[in-house]
Length: 359
Image (tube, rainbow, N blue to C red; front, side, top):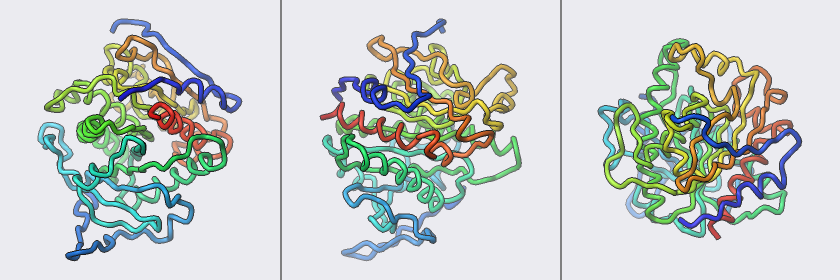
């Protein structure tokens, strides 16, 4: 996929006060709503029975397309996961937010080089796919507002909601550790889908919140041939995909994208990173308790530090913003999209970069 790397110019040219652009050189070597119904009638599709009330879609763009890809109800263990292909459940949403059964073949048939895809990955404790849709469309509407109210490229996009089994299953730290383990399996599943995108020359951008950010970078690492819990994606290795990535309060260690880090190969497939972090986040401040490593800081807490280079050896372009003043001590996704933090603006520019780079 030919990319010209214009993310920096777009982002820097319109940054809000308090935003900072970073380019880094490495400093050292280094089950759920499991069974989504598949109701269908010969010759026509009927909405799936997902409870989306109250209405969640008063402000979506008719020109954009919406998809739900769910891994709820399939294998969560890395060792046992089916990867060639994974059993992804695919649905489509209409402009009123109604959900219809679809298939992976139909989804892939709609990929177009002139129409970018944005994959949104939610964080922990989103109990059902209906909850994932509500959250994803809230984020979409904030981003859409900036796309429509500025002079940014605004051609139609496909908005993909990645719904993974993040419902509460235990208490406190035990529950968090269960979900942390699942992010590796999700990374492998998502890497498989990304590989299909690359094969179809499909322009793609990605947004991940909290553990969703960890899934995004894990997928890009696996796409490049990296392993997650000793499991790699079988088949072709993809390098140089140059995908633009938005990370909101990512729950992953701040050196994972550095040379020698757990997701070190991710940068071989990244063009730019738009990072929103919070140095007052109480949850991420205690991230080190997850693996009982005292000096392990979360990237969503500490902010940018070290990143491995791209495939060509150049530095990954990173736009970062500390949203502590806007979000406070909470680990709250939607607060990053308020006017003081400007998450909608940052992510709309990230998507615009993907649009321009693929013209």
